Image (cartoon, helix red, strand yellow):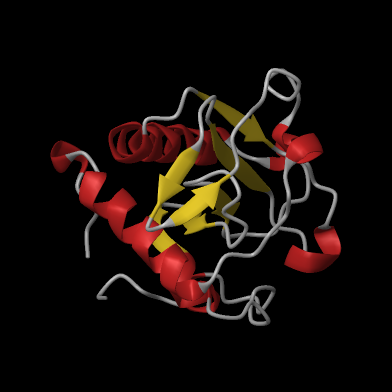
Length: 169
């Protein structure tokens, strides 16, 4: 697919060179941000927005970086709404695993579902009455999904992207 790029091509500091199959998970760029499907797809459509430059804290993000982040979220949410119809969303900035990403602020965009969810013959995590009020990270099963499934998820997201907000390829 023409929009499969290694994240390491977009973030030249080499912090992401160790990520396997990263080109499969690349969705698009939004100025200083890269949208990347999370390889842990327990919540169908879970995506990362990664700042291309080094910054470890939300307070280090500039106003010029916040506008593209908001735009990225709005575009992504419109596509996820159309593709998978989640019931709500969680956004998270945790900063707990700096050793994995070398100091790149990133946000987790997490669709949440109140019903069983199946896509491409795979079952994905959904909330129960007990988990619906909890942060996604407390209930996440942390399962890495196969490349074949992630590629199908990404294609569905890209096909659902709003036409007036088309991704440049």
